[in-house]
Image 1 (cartoon, rainbow, N blue to C red):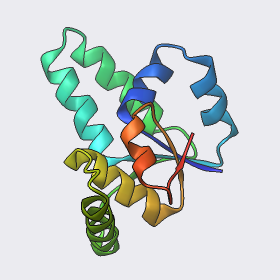
Image 2 (cartoon, helix red, strand yellow):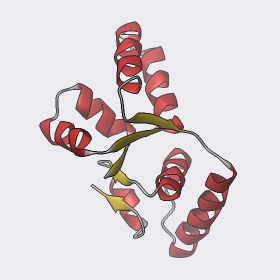
Image 3 (cartoon, helix red, strand yellow):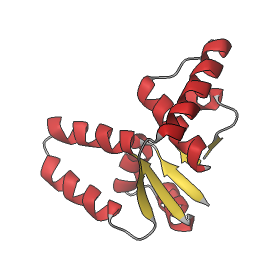
Image 4 (tube, rainbow, N blue to C red):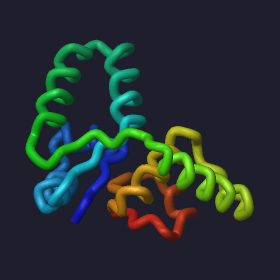
Length: 127
């Protein structure tokens, strides 16, 4: 399985959530969308444990099978299609989450998240 982590589930993993840990360990590849990395670092910048959290993030990203997923030209096409779909459905999602959905779609990954609004995108496999 190819698994993409949303920000909230990365935080859960770092806090020792056994369910997330099991999913990560079972995954062939773990994708961390660049937007998730940015959201995490924004949190680190205003938190009291920024340096320690950055070290944990760097160690996690250096693990075998973990990759940062960056936007490509193809990602922008997925973004546009998902944007249109959500607009037609009347179920918009936050912009950062739309980028995450586009990357997950492009890479054919399952999305590990606690955000219910991703369920408006039936084509996403949300775990």
